[in-house]
Image 1 (spheres, rainbow, N blue to C red):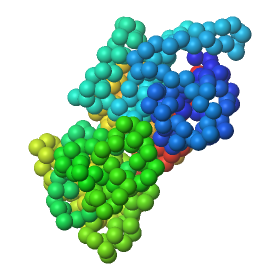
Image 2 (image 1 turned 180 degrees about the vertical axis):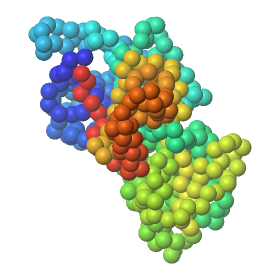
Image 3 (image 1 turned 180 degrees about the horizontal axis):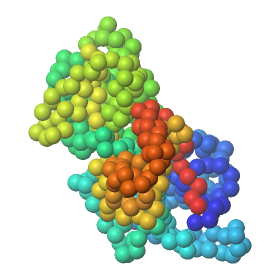
Length: 410
């Protein structure tokens, strides 16, 4: 696709139409109440959530795409000056309410942009997405895949969200006399909170959320399980930015309180780094048996804080399954940083087929070097590998999620 036609999750001048995958802040950087650069396409749920997020936004700019329906756009080629047709279909990304991936097709072929997504093989939403993609592609290949590569590394292995949700419930059950604090974002983790409410049967006392979050819950049609009255419940969902050791220590001076951070993020960071407001410390692995091999994906980061690998992003095995299913001709990660970006093709070369300078194929290259490659080539190769592993060591997913998301399609 040529430049100047479509932008996804990027809001600068220079495109004819714009697409938003979902309303998390790292995908709306540059979007504001005064933004008026062109038509903005999004899902129906995202459109409902738009006004509270951007008060005063010109809603006439919004173009709602229903899941699973093809739409045709008439654009102008900046190269030829002629009209060109681009078709697009939105598919549920299984990330947070309103999140979608976009499949574009036109003279450029088929282009799939996942946005943030979770490809859980056993999920009904994933099965529906798979069927939609099979039908939409109709035996044609994906020429270019823009993929959520947040956790595109074999070391990032998470349980399903159903399993992680039960782990959270197990922790809560272990502290029947404690208040419980759960760190969440302004959008997402609704299914986790509903699971907690329904499993622990706290519907009558509900789960506390802050006022803006309650407004979001009501827009999503969730009226019965949440409240802003702290006296009605011992379970509170608080903004992630307010979740810290200092907060938990202060709360424990008044009442016994345990904090739970449901996120893939602590598992993706070097354990010597701080994350989610937690300083560097020795962690304790907790065996909360849920009858599966992921039972140790729970850590006690502090005497008051647990982390559970409840992730709304695909882990490495999810990504592998997705790329095997799509079999793209070209692939590019949507999350990048100058200091820590790793091309997803590195770990997926055996599936994707694109050449790589690094990694597990060095044994084959070493055999070739023994047949006559000069020592300087070997030194250069080792230097590149060392630089690559150094970049992995320095990787900070919190920075990746905050900067350089979105792409101008070309």
